[in-house]
Image: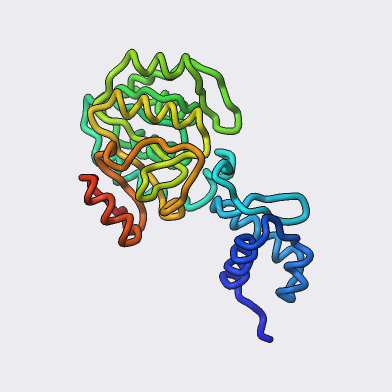
Amino acid sequence: MSRLGKLERRDRILGQLRLSPHVRISELADQFGVSTETVRRDVDALSRQGLVARAYGGAAASTVGFQPPFGERNQRLVDERARIAGRAASLVKPGEVVMIDAGSTTTQFAKALAMLNVPLTVLTNSLSVATTLGQQPTIDMIICPGDFVASEAAVYGHETEAFLRRHHADHAFIGASGIAEAGIMDANRPASAIKRVMIAQARQTTLLIDRSKFEKSYLSIICPLSDLDAVITDSPPGRMLEQALGASGVTLHVAL
């Protein structure tokens, strides 16, 4: 039997996890006729995409409550998320008040905003967003109070939500763990609460999301698609999701 290619191996791993909640790296290596290091790299790559959860000696099926930490997410699909961020920055007008939630794509968006050199007021619960924009002389940077979560480099909780409710914004830019016809979702319940408040307090909301999150369901439903004004992504979604976005009046931007 000819040796499987990288993509074929990873498809086989995902296929086995649909039948079993856990697979062992050593068993996969024997099955594929490759080294355990090769399979471990496959599992690491799938984990960075949020498709599996790394487990002792192997991999486990990614659950609706699982999301890799911010530092790990921030290292994948960097070019794609940079394109999304650039398109999002082009929608921002000088003098606007902008809310930005915590996440890897919104951090890329903050970097794109920093290059605009235009006057803005920015409210965020993200330490990385605040650090990126706080040194810009044209930006009035306001960081929310709250309980710091190191794995997300952000603050959450009742104080964060109450603080945001005392402000209004022209535009909210948020991320999410997944998007499907049912709406946008997140594995992190406290993060979902922050996103809902930002959506409620902003005149318009734009979702920044890469293609790896299409048709993915997670623990917490943030809002229906109709609560969004626009979605910016790096690749066209499938027909069903694209139709659902159109029916909900959401403008789709594909940053190629």
